[in-house]
Length: 344
Length: 134
Image 1 (cartoon, rainbow over the protein chains, first blue to last red):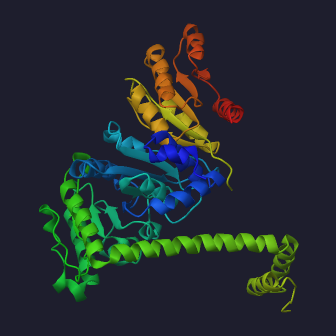
Image 2 (cartoon, rainbow over the protein chains, first blue to last red; image 1 turned 180 degrees about the vertical axis):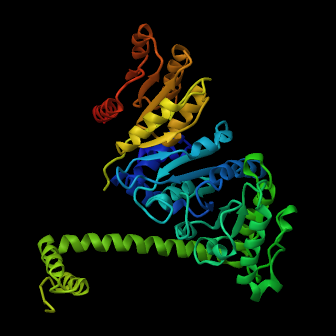
Image 3 (cartoon, chains in turn cyan, green; image 1 turned 180 degrees about the horizontal axis):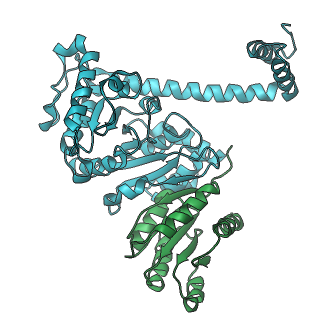
């Protein structure tokens, strides 16, 4: 059953890995078969999501962070999946994140893969999780997932990453921005990058206030102080909540990267000790199954229900003879019983 | 939905720092619906081949304005082949003297484009080359 390509991947052949990534990304039969097999070998990688608004320095931070991770844990390979948006009009894309990752080109233990979002709206591409599974199976210990430049609600990465880093830059907004729902809520670690710019301290203080408001209840049994990451990774206590630290970096100058790396490794230790690693893994698998279930059910539905019936109900709804709600009820009924039992 | 996207790496080998041409071509390919990976300035042939491998591209477009094309282009192609990427279409744009073109084509370059090329022609050529390759 196993293809020659998968054998090569297991032997560490990087071209085979790259080819399988393409097959999986394109959803070919070979890609689906490869993923079914490779998934059974996943579950060891630490997946780290990096998100934040366009221009906050995500790619540059990934560049610096990857070098530090390789230095700190040289036995672990690092994969980077960098997602950029596809044009809604032509489907084309410019994938430019590699331009900021030029320091990583000489290290064969690092693999950078650019991905176009291909119409997906949550900050990732449809197949980003699948690609991360291929890297996991191929023995990459750290997988960094960089989202498209995210606004307030592109939060899909949190379903996929063990550790989510939200990157902001000085001057992006005031304290009311920071208490809105959405992207800041998903952070395990908050980073104010470009911290050599004016306004950095103010951004840090906004974000710290936000964090402290959210965790007021548990602030007394916190597992660390917000500035503790100058030391080596601290031992996390299993009972305590994780309180997102707010860190300053200047990624282009490699400033603050040691502290950020400490925070990431501490977070991983916290997840493992508190049982949340297991819980997150299970949640990600459940989400994955649900997504595929929805797609599969929709496909079944369209195979089962004649397109003409759908068209006729669309027309009725357009004439305001029925509501879209009623149309859906009729379609689902047809799908169950294979007959029209109109609710008119 | 699962129509395969053409993936193109646009790279600038060598030392010249003028990447407007490369960016214009990258943009034109994007507008033609391709996925274009841009790698930035001053890349060695090894770096370009490595990026092409990691990105599993169908096409590599090189832009050279420095005059070093006779040295750099064969090296890029040799590195691609050494990595096993023998089926990648390589095209070249920039300031390339007429007399050098045949030699580059002999080394495996698919086409050479000079200043003033209609970008629609480049898009069309790439689509054809990728189709015949598949």
